[in-house]
Image 1 (cartoon, rainbow, N blue to C red):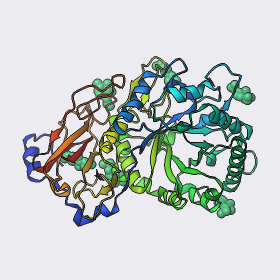
Image 2: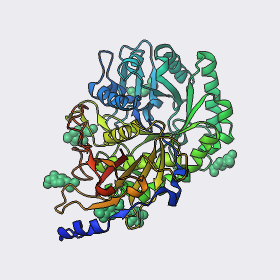
Image 3: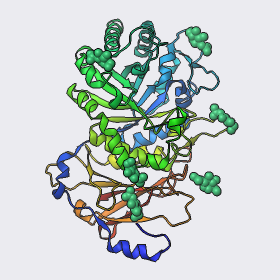
Image 4: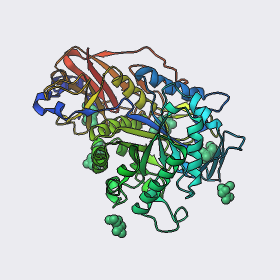
Length: 505
Ligand SMILES: *[C@@H]1O[C@H](CO)[C@@H](O)[C@H](O)[C@H]1NC(C)=O
Ligand SMILES: *[C@@H]1O[C@H](CO)[C@@H](O)[C@H](O)[C@H]1NC(C)=O
Ligand SMILES: *[C@@H]1O[C@H](CO)[C@@H](O)[C@H](O)[C@H]1NC(C)=O
Ligand SMILES: *[C@@H]1O[C@H](CO)[C@@H](O)[C@H](O)[C@H]1NC(C)=O
Ligand SMILES: *[C@@H]1O[C@H](CO)[C@@H](O)[C@H](O)[C@H]1NC(C)=O
Ligand SMILES: *[C@@H]1O[C@H](CO)[C@@H](O)[C@H](O)[C@H]1NC(C)=O
């Protein structure tokens, strides 16, 4: 919009022309607000890396413990952790084994090909996490031996604290099983028949009362055909698997799994708000199917770029902004949780828990997706969210309204706004960061506002992100003094590749 060679003009021009977000009553958007869970941002940890993340019986991983505890301290609940992924399908409970967890790796593959664990893994899951930690525990369906998940549930029921278990997940991405996993006929009917049969057997033997997460489907809904969540309803999953805790689906909008798709990966593309909105619409029938079955819909494993992320894209400030846009948009669509996947060497992880291949443990900017949502939702009693149309001239500005509870009237003003300027600004740019001025006084029906800014040197920054002037990068311990900005006359500035949370005080 502005030329960087005219440094004075933008200030003058933008003051005169600040965009105004018109009030609720014109769009009646409060009536479209839906609940947003305080654990909307949750985590999925690749099974083979769980001990790296959570430590061993001798003690917790201090970095992970701190990072999870931070969120519990803010909202009362840490992110839910789903333990799973491809490697849940090669994991076995082994009571005589002497190690908490043993991985077998083959060269060139960052995912273990065989895993055994003993009861000490459950001590780790009991003791090395915040007090309110909840887990979704992934079970082995892939190897097609009923006694494997049976033994896993037996052990979990015996050794894992009852309150830790949110649900069990039987199988990871069953729609992508190859002929080595299922040499015979394999389709949505055989899958459904098998999990109903096995879960009933497991329940009758262990007497577990815990719920089940079903699906964990890998394919994009537009290509799923009938291997889909709506079809699971048709095939009687809700009547036969009880309690049905949640349906789950997986997605990575980009991939480096093959050269063709790798060539398409870009941070600018990832950050494109209209692409994000369009892409996730394909889950609407799955979300509706979960509601029809009176259960939850989780995006149960997700990240920016499949095959473990891309350095400079997945581990950046821009990826953190994408995650915020994703979870807010996902909540608007009716998703109940979005589980960002992690593994020690994976670039889309929110943090690397231990030293790996000569690189020190570190916290990535994407951890701030957890922090920003936790802080923003923490003082809203039972938060609701609605999407706010971008003002004309800013087609790609992502804006969301938050309410402390279900809005009573379509004209109810929101308590907070989140504005994400998804335009790309590089930390190496030699021109000043373009900054948009947006007048939010009308929509918030107040000029008594405070602003918390989420920023970094650029979208491509892999460190140095702050929220309200504070950083969690140093061992997960907050540093820096909390800074609120004012919004003079209700006008907030949002630079390219920055976000702000504006709240009425
Ligand atoms: C993994 O375990 C299977 C079954 O026990 C075994 O046949 C296979 O050789 C193991 N693979 C490796 C690489 O150790
Ligand atoms: C599901 O889709 C497959 C492949 O398109 C097809 O062969 C099969 O008949 C379908 N099954 C049902 C129950 O619709
Ligand atoms: C975002 O994607 C849309 C659709 O592909 C495209 O038309 C638009 O130019 C993109 N915007 C940016 C800022 O790249
Ligand atoms: C380990 O580091 C070396 C040297 O930097 C690099 O070439 C290699 O790809 C790394 N391996 C993994 C698995 O990350
Ligand atoms: C930014 O500049 C530094 C120093 O020249 C360089 O090392 C880095 O790769 C650049 N980053 C990007 C994303 O271009
Ligand atoms: C972000 O702000 C800049 C500067 O005003 C503006 O040019 C750009 O369109 C904004 N980006 C979005 C996505 O609205």
